[in-house]
Image (cartoon, rainbow, N blue to C red; front, top):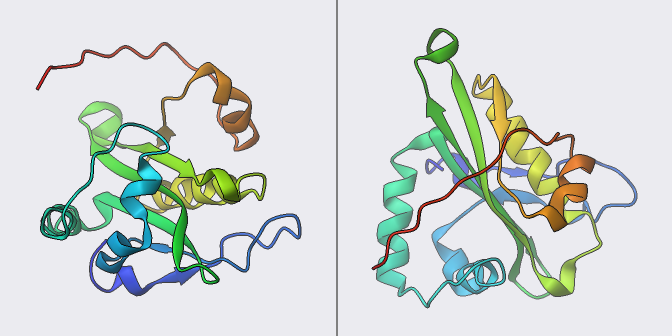
Length: 167
């Protein structure tokens, strides 16, 4: 998410069944006003975030460079973010100081589904992890989304566990 990368625009695949006229790009500060936070709210509770809070978190993530990126798809007709996802790179001692990519927060706007935007986002993030030198990329999902991620090339592996902390 460095400043140079935030101007990068990629179209992903050219499958005629996808909406590849909508380019995938890195998150920009201006995306706060384009419904980015509201889109995340379709995935998980996401209270409003002020512009100052957004800019502060954006700067924190941008400082991580290619070790944490957020991509978005913007619909130019509405100037709204219609899909997003992120990947962060975990540096490990295992596998000879290997790296693992973690895909998170993949969501497509309810009005923009069935256009394969989610598949494009996941492929973009997985390719970023591959280019970053990760030996694998992993994600957590609900059982209802298992089929979607299988179409993206993922296989079920292990069990996810969580411990939540109260505020």
